[in-house]
View (cartoon, one colour):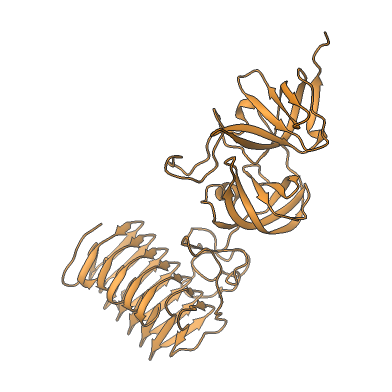
Length: 463
């Protein structure tokens, strides 16, 4: 970090006449003002994989520069190359007189005078399944090739100042998504077989999440036999998940509910298949079939019923009671099924905070907050069952409170038309584990679905 190189380059790492594996590093803010690259490879055979290379600058090849490597191929895979700058050519990658396979990289937000993501001259390349987005160059587009042979396939090259430019090359283009509305898509080169020029529909362009939404035209649109195709994507998830590989660095996989609850508000998501466990007007709850996570969903006129198996596409939010939810744009019914409620004592209802590993509520505003004095795993959104003695009951408000004698009580809300048990009754209840924010304190709450969710075990003795 913050190293400086003069002469040839390699402000962080320099390889000359060698074989090197450069893996899983964070390489930030290095500078080679008259040289090339935070990583500089001269006549070297190198594997550069799994690194985050960001905020570096050089005269050419802000992140990686490859020179005179014919016969000694370089592999660049599964890296994040972002925010790098070249005063000349190749904001992220500069490749000349070399052989390189460049696959499964996320190349975003780089800048250069010529070619914002990669400049390639008199070389042989395989450029496949990369996501190249929001890069800016004065000339030469996101990707510029001169006298180059090889293949450019399965890439997303979108939202850059311009797309692919070429001079005198012999390139095979196939199954790319090239979409750059502020400039050209192709210059002195024709679109390849099955190339498309449409919005790839990222999860969130503004937040820098370049994974694909479920409606993306890049899903199942790639070339399965593309050279340089890996078995896994940039996230380490399986490729060719549904028979045809996706275009770009990320294979589309619906997100698990437990993962969704850890994302920031306003992120766009598509869920895995999930069971509908409760319906309350324009609100319903979904739960993973393995009962590991559940979540609230808002959608007017959603048309789903309890017991449906669905997939939900929408935007994540957090309501005033601190409960995470999805504002659904689309609900797809996949079938039917059922899940059994999780049984637990009152003190476990709601549970503790669900946060990213190492995160604290003072530093993050996402995750799922637990309840006051919450204990154990967070279960807000899941179908649960618990029991206790009714300590308070309000038929007018449609709620009652139970206590199982272990120091915690739980408020239960019933839908209109459901009879509330009497104070002193011993009851079992089944419903959705939820929460209620009262004066800044978050309390446990169960949302019952109807009369059958209340089982009276024993009435209080008369007199």
